[in-house]
Length: 334
Image (cartoon, rainbow, N blue to C red; front, side):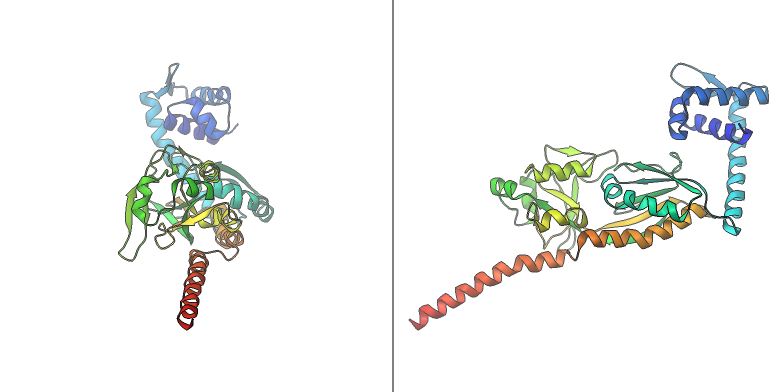
């Protein structure tokens, strides 16, 4: 085993305050992590860590070594990036995090295609609706579908995704159909909750500007697909990207609501830590994602949009109005 790899393990242990946590991130067993730390201590001839049953803490020499190691690893990364940027093919492990629903429907099916294009790259997916700290979690790329506010990361926008409020016909039959945004406060709203989530605050668009409502409900989860299942079961109203529920809306299992007051669109974007030299593996993945993600989202929509839904909703009203006029005209003639 190389000295550099042992240093990487040691740095991760210090950052996580735990050999077990470091091992999970590096996909190493705690026994392997412990052995590598012992090997490193033997090589240096000093104790780097004080160990307890619950955590590890660097000694004075260990902390000084940790700080020096960060400079070493940064220099190695710069050297690798230069080499890859000059003439090397993309290679190494690419760690990507993405929302569960997006990964299942869009990203995961595209992974084999990406890896065939870049045979020297290994891709690790970490699926979560949670907002992950890319630096602390050693993630190379985050795919997010949200209204982004974090300026500390490089953001590459792919597209805006329309969102829609919807519910099942059974729910609307029992609880009524909301006619204006304020009506949502009297309905069961299905919420996507996790640390840092703002999904309990729904911001809807209108001619007078955005309107934010603090909605509530008895059902919440940190998996968007669970919310879709509950919605189909008649448990409440949900806010979803339109492409995720396009099929259910087309076949009538879900009904779009408040089309004149839609939620703000979410940006489908990629984020990665700010680096002067972007690794080749990240660059080629970003280029691939920009070209393919939008295509796959468009396939799911298959021409469906908020505007097409508004037009479809207006047709029955036009026919009803036309029928009334014809009846009135006939009555007048009679």
